[in-house]
Length: 618
Image (cartoon, rainbow, N blue to C red; front, side, top):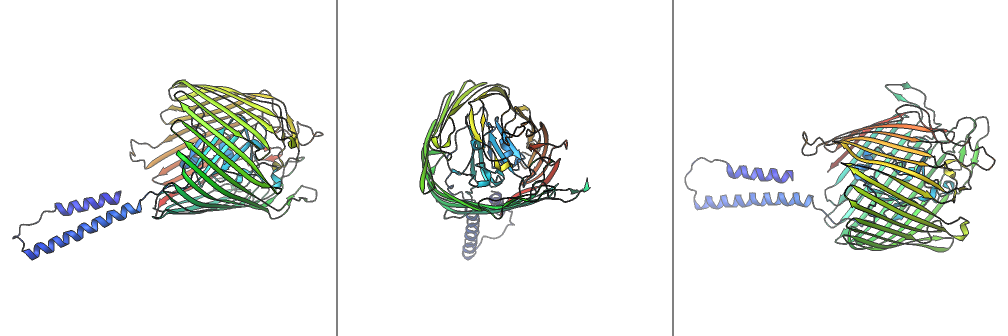
């Protein structure tokens, strides 16, 4: 647009210039002048055409259906720009906002990151463009390592809080403009953190699309900075490195699109030496590759749509797990080195202004048989009433699930929601059926919503977490009731608040009795000084507190020994954006105190990270 304005101004100046008086031109002179004017007009028209062609918007690639928001506010929906602006380094940081979710970390960026809902790791599910990310690695015990879930190449992230489980819907980045777009991120910090990431996106006039990018991250225990000097460079606390590459190649025109997406994540993590008397976490070196081929029709945001996807995932462990224990020999835990699985997704649906419905079938070949997991989803919004349903049969863990949900807003300042989830595991799992109830109410005072509710979970049986170094097995959990409280909104001008708290009647395995997360944020574009939005300011102070988390290490083990201490962690974040470049600084664990999220595995006392994110159009 700037070029258009400059061209128009130049043309106006040429037409408006004063010329000295001269005798009337001859016929030949008039013809030459007309010819020159036509040439100049043609040049201006060609210049404008080139500008328009360079900014053409093409049809988007197919997008998988995401559920309508049935929360009090939109606090669990994140767009491309807001994902990293939260300070999240991986998905675990965003899941900390969800009542009932407990996250686990063994270290900094290269460490293990996991999550459970009501103590059960299988009740946190992640979907990328409609494909469920299955934890097929034998060493994970059915729990997905969230370090393998990338945030930097997403267009949208939505956390769906069903009463009985948490579903995370990821939408990979896509591009519609024919102007190439590039982003480069460079950051460094304590623990010898060094990282670089970049990507390029491009569309062509014929509808073709190309995207590719990569990321390299490395950490090492010990600090080398201007404030503390050198404190050693040992690699004993889940240090390591990770390389990620992704690519998309596709074509879209009108309502039809075809595209392929692939990603490769290579990781190497050192063993984590524990405190005396506790178990080590083994080292790991492996690779996870996954991708899909998709054909789509229509847009899931409006009207009739359908999609067919063929996906595959392959994991490789390059060596057996090894754990180093002081004063003893190295313990080697052998496991399968290569695993693979395919998943086929067929989906069709329709979305109107006030209702939507869809049918999805996920097919997984297993043990020579094709396992089908059909899902029916329906949602409607009518005046002050919203409702939704999710019905899944024979899920990935052979469980039937039914979720029913409703929200009522009788007044603009009042919202009430309630939901029920039921689970019916297959007979071969030897697990009991159960249900979960959730009810909440909130009132709005000016721009702040304040509310609370209950979360009631039936007695259940779920697996332990071998990914965290816990012996494999199953543990029983008694019925439990949690009281929740939340505050979210704008307190004053650019000051925002987000508080989540839950208190259970008792602690259970893998879950603390009390969790509180508080965030204060100052978010402003300072429009009075920068009316065009060239400036942005984002400062956050995050306070996380949790009670002790008990882990199950066997019936003969003392439960007190394997219960973590209560932990309080404070994080500070500062971002300043100028035009399309963002400078950021993050300080984790501001107080510097020691804490654990896995028993015996001490987290880094304090970590600083700083860098720049720079977006530009070529």
